[in-house]
Image 1 (cartoon, rainbow, N blue to C red):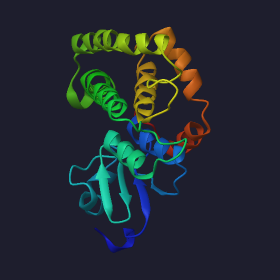
Image 2 (cartoon, one colour; image 1 turned 120 degrees about the horizontal axis):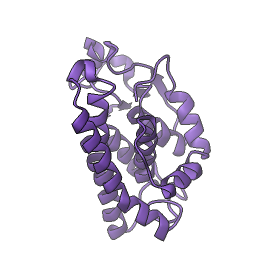
Image 3 (cartoon, rainbow, N blue to C red; image 1 turned 30 degrees about the horizontal axis):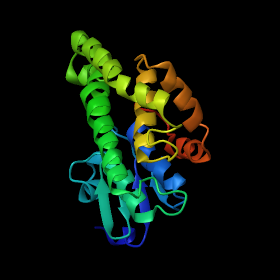
Length: 219
């Protein structure tokens, strides 16, 4: 770790739905932090300075004093468990509720993000790098909508958030996937549109969106 980072809370990364997750969690928890506004595919993640922090050369990365963590889902889970308290925990307290929270986090990160949305991203917006694959893109869109059916059922049957009345990191993950999907013209359920109307009015969301804005956006 470079000496100038010791004792500071720094979030590296702006401009994408995944970096938005970390900004949002920090604002929900009212944690002061600095931003290093580097972007993916800009060359800024390839520098020796950043590679010391994350040898995988991916953003976001959180440097919290002497602790460094990457991967957006892991960052927001760490923040929730380290700093959540009172009415703003971002993670359930009960054992079974926490297990359900983990289930949602893993489901969203894998089935909605990695398995579908990133396939669409790779073979449409980044087709010049990864090649065009229109069949894979259409199949991914269909699979996303199918898997989103579980979200639809949950939202229609329960409270305003995935875990009922409690806003958690699972909602941060889901919201960024839904906004990402809409940017890519992937259909979502009416219940998801209503859900987005609720969560995107949160003050922390608006502040995080401003912090995550950059000279160019890579959805």
